[in-house]
Length: 329
Image 1: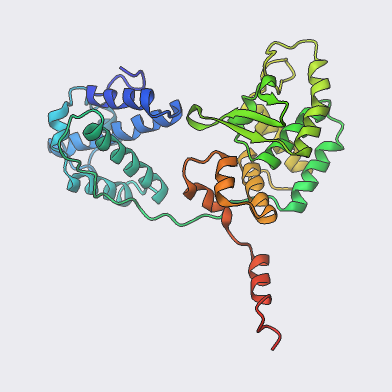
Image 2: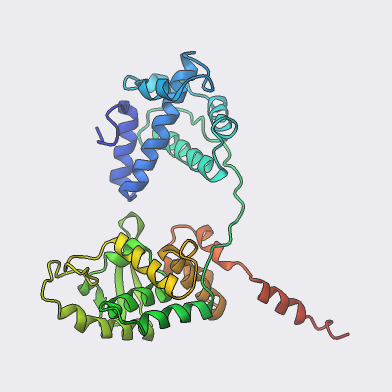
């Protein structure tokens, strides 16, 4: 048993175990797979056994129903029509957003693909032709260059006793585009003499991030205050809390929110993740960075994820039209 759900049927536990051991995924991602597929298989059980129509069963009945005894023979009875009906049910009855339905489809496809190609438990894949809902491309929110500079100035000129640490954190966010989890997990030994830092990204994948002058200066100013702490408990962690332990994600979130407010910006719009968006956007807009290089910097598995940062703002659109040689005629 995986420990994620004691009511998991064995076949689901086999899939989860395979993902944990072979797919290099985070625990959070694998738990999401388990949640999606457990609900999917429970819905299939209801449909196949004519227990009740899915739209007639109450939440209490659904939650109390056990699928522990589902076996591979049951899985083989699931058809592409069953899957289509389930996705339609999530849309029409459960009002799932396209992004949520797309995640469900991805989980189901991964499950059946693994059963066919890796675990060799089935002969045909009923999810092969299932299409995912079309998702509109969302333009990520980000700070403008002027807003970014204002935020850094607010931190730099503040009177907070941790301002060197806070300035270093926000500088790394805005220059390197790190994820929150990546930043808080940095150890002092991860910073190399060749002006790089090794960070652990999604799925436990390690990558090297180059540090520019602003980052190096911020780290250089922060380290003496870090090393001067008398209560250091986590000697490896680069960023420490007031208690001398590795700084938590929540502490960083609260710190960013505080400075966002001081810079007269909206804390609901600009979280640590939006600072990552800002770094990516500024690199692409002002640095004319190749999208493949940007993908490497951000640690994206797919180039499609990186493409959301290649949006063109209104200023660029106007400049493009104005640059037309026919514009002066």
